Image: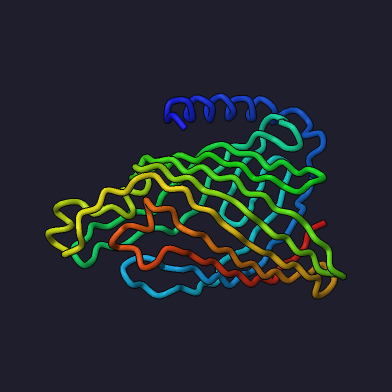
Length: 249
């Protein structure tokens, strides 16, 4: 997405959202609904031979009026659009890399953009377009479909999606400049854009009154722009999560 166009949309939607603050949010919850609790995340460090990392982090998947939280994505619902809203969104990423082995430090990306969640009788469609306002100045586009299958008391959510990262986004994180190549011994590499498919599965089970357990696993098959980098360990990335959450109705 063009940077100027995205910035213009963000400013326009922010102004519209502020103008609606005084108006009642018809159709939106007037109290917190969803899940909040602690989660154990298994995050893959797929760079420079680093091992996977297990972290205890907050789990948040809830709505409160126009505000929403969906794991790593947070935002604000603006105008009604189809079966959802056009949203201002931001994402929390931990894709930094410290300077080592002759390579320069990479800072965390700060993706900000627009998106929507379309909840239909056929399933849920998540669409997002982000621009990294930090160092890479690249774009990240994604589309994810999630269905719901009920088995007894358990809710099962299979997911399929695709992610598109621009060349500038990838080159900042996975490229190797000429000076880095000389210092590190890695071959020089200029990363191109990438298209990455994803499959996931979430299982949610009630465990006590107002408490639910959540198990999630996702795998990405990295596009060539990322997978061909000499500082990448392998061409897939996994994420695992186990959480116990309080369910707000």
